[in-house]
Image (cartoon, rainbow, N blue to C red; front, side, top):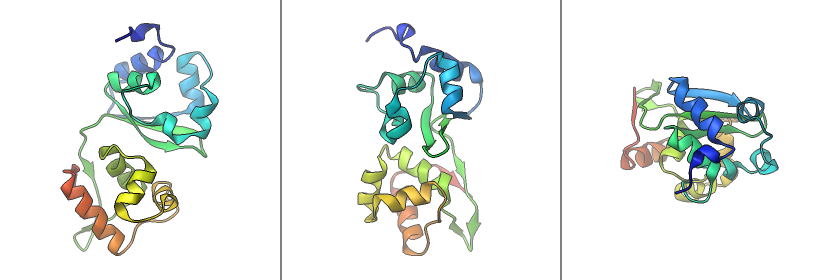
Length: 161
């Protein structure tokens, strides 16, 4: 394995490691400030650039070595949420059923280590539906919430009331 201290993403790794928080929101501009260089164009136009993959992605390796996953990527507002994996997500419930809001849907998908497209196929919905759920355009309802709860249970997704 190459020495990541020579990577241009090493300053981000150290920033996250030293932050001492479980979750941190950064704008793309803040990430660039930390790095001291501009992000590549793909970081602004391809959500996949922010995926948590250990092979072939030096940037992902940097935040993963710091103990984080990139979870909430808001391409329109150029913002990313880095979160330590293994957190237990607290959800609100209505009549005992979890309310699947944008952050919870995104957290489940990341827990499953799936792209939006892969998650959509698993749930039998369009990729745009997943995107709309994750950006808060609307929340899943009815059978979709039941299916999300079943998938979460099968995946041992750590969420509580």
